[in-house]
Amino acid sequence: MDNLFLYILGALINSWFICTWFFTSLPLHLFKPFIKKEDEIYSWEDWNNWLMLKNDFIAELLGCPLCLGFWSSVIISNLVANINELDYKFILAGAFTWPLIAFVFYKKLEK
Image (cartoon, rainbow, N blue to C red; front, top):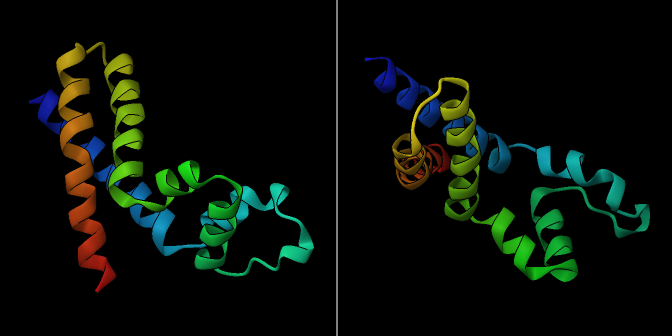
């Protein structure tokens, strides 16, 4: 029962992260030290275009809900598994299912 609770908790944390990343200006604030004032970045779309010009691989990784969802799931599932002394199966389950759950939340909130 504890594993189910941790699985659901991890899925919700990952979904929260993905929705926060794509529906707020969090990326602008995190990347602010790297953006020159004359670049005039004021929105998420401006930031994504700016990043695409700098590094298209990183822009794709940070601009795709499924891509970012996978890597954030890997990190979150590793943290949850290590803190609770769970085996690699929990990490694999989280890494390969939480992105889809987060994407469903993202698509529902996008409308």
